Each structure stands twice: as C-alpha cells, then as structure tokens.
Image 1 (cartoon, helix red, strand yellow):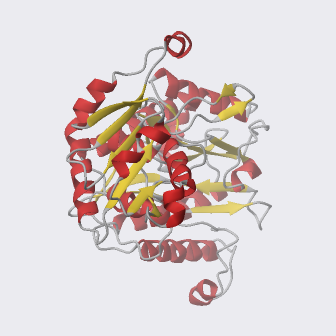
Image 2: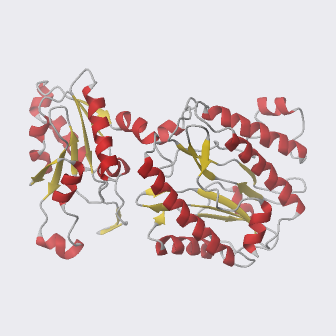
Image 3: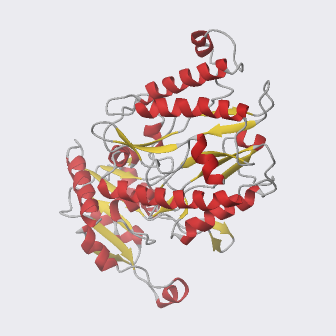
Length: 424
C-alpha cells in the first residue's frame, strides 16, 4: 500500500506546484467524537487523511508544501499516562518512513507548525471544527501579522484538491472495496437463515453487524432493515417491527474494511417466496437496474443512466397499472417521482457516499477507476391498487473499466430464483 500512498503524495505535490500562488495542503487526523461527557464514539480516521497516510493514529498533522522537499508529518509527544489509558500508538518513525516524510515531534501544534507555513499564500485544509488543521487556521487568522496583511494567506477547502484524486480508485483501493464486498456477501448469506415471520428487524441488523465484526469489519453506515411498509422509508433505522408473513424485507448494508466501504441492497420475501404481484414489481426494478449496468462504460454521463432508469421504471409502473398515460408525458411531469424519488447511485470508496460533491453533479462523466453504486427503487408507502406497501431497491457496486464495467457485488444473489434458493 505504501507505494500507492507515495504516488498520491507525489501527484498532490505536482498539483500544488502548478498553482499560480504558492499553495500547500494541511490535513490532520479526525478529532475524537464525543458521545457524552467524557465518553467517545469509536474512533474513525478522517477519510482524506487516511487516503494520504494510511494511518489510524490520532493527533497527527500532514503538510504538503512546495517549500518542503518532502511531506512533513507532525506527531505529538506520547506520555506514559496516554499509553496507560489508550495503549501505545503506531510508530511515528515507521509511518514517516513509509510516507517518505520528514517527522517533526511537536510540543504545541499551533506554535510548532507556523514556521513550516512561511511563504505559503494559499492554504488548503478541512473546515472541521476541533480538528488540528482547523485550529491552526483559526490561530493564523488571529495573529497580528495576518490581520496587518503581512501574512497574506488565503484559506481554501481541501476538497478542491482531493475530490478529483479520490474519484479514481487505484489498484489497492479496488482490492480494499472487494474485501469489504466479500465480507458483506458472507453476512447476507448467513443472515438469510433468520429471515422468517416474527423475526424482529433488529435481530436481522444484529446478525449482519455480527458477521461484519467477526470478519474484522465495521458497518460502513447504519444498517437499514425495512420490512413491509418500513421498506418505503429510504433510510429507515428504527428497527422496531417484526417481520410479517407475506411482506417484503429490504436490507441495505455494507461492511467497512480498512475504511473502504461496500454498499449493497437486496430484497427478500419474508415467507421465502415472492408472490405474483411482488415478483412483477421486483422484476420492474431489476430490469431497470440491469439495463443501467449494461450501459456503464467510460464516457457515459451519470445523468443519462438516471434518465434510463426513470424510463424503465415508468414503463414498468405503467404496465402494472400504477401509472396511466403516455410514457413520455408521465416522465415530463415526473409522475414517477413518488415511487422513485432518489438518484441512480453515488461514488463509493473511503466513504459510502464518496466524494459526495462529485457524485451529485449531473455532469459527472464515468471514467476508468470510478466505483459507483447503481440502485434504482420503487416505494409504495401505502396500498396502491393491488400492491401492498413495500420498498424495493436493488443496489450493486460497479467498477468502471477501460472497456466497460465490473460488477463487484455480482456474487450476491439478486434474481428471484437465486433469492428464493438462498432462503430455503
């Protein structure tokens, strides 16, 4: 992994050197998130910092500057008291060696880093309250030299540098996502055994999360388990219901392994078999998803994929009698929106909604190395004609390749016969 991280740092340095004004990037470890009083949530490293360091350690600062021949890693002095309570952190010397960085052990991050910023006109950092890089920026703004204008520094968001880099996954990142997918696939397969009437939704979620942890992973996001009408709530998290005979169960989950995420949604019939109406609705979504995936290749706009999904779902809903009218007119007046209210997918990587600003852009054009989720859905929050309330979303993780695509989650059953076989 070290060679990939060193390559990222070199590309970043090259990008900074191309700027008109002397520019630098300052990133820091994620601040600890307080749960209550003096207790904290499990620590999770900042995604950008991990992308450039591969480190899970707290209280680090990374500076990439045109005035420094190599990256500079600022690390804290570790006291015996810290080691007693939290354990010994990873070796900072070894980390600096992997990054080919100069190591500086700081006493006070606000004071010791200022000299290294001399000559920098534009400082890229993340505006995360409480982070060390944010504290440095706040400190600089309060310095008399800054207020007099003799420290002419402009602050910019690190996203402007890193979104484009993180959008394209290198070989090590693709392998990390594949590992997360394998763990997710095993968890879903093990969980099939407890999908039956009267099982609490929370037991389904607990089973999935258990198998994540047994494989050295965490949930990449709060596991969504929506049975019956609860499946029509896009990010349902209450987990208060029990599975009912004749309902559908929507499961949206993903393991996070070494901070890289999987994101998969599957729908299961609680009693083990889809009835005729459920199957017809399910096949509408599945056909739309397969059609979209078949079009994924370099040069395709994400907007076009969404438009294709809209057309396929609108046609399907019309065939089922849920929508009435000419398909083109139904699309023009967005008659599909109550049933398909979200996008076709999002980038996936270190965050489940990876480099989100890029993913929201209608103009995003697919290129080799991008990983996208493809997740059309149909949601019925109340009985609609002959159809019971339910949510059907089918989601896969897709890598854009030079000649087309690779469905990273292809091993996870999604055809009706496969799902029913899994539940037997």
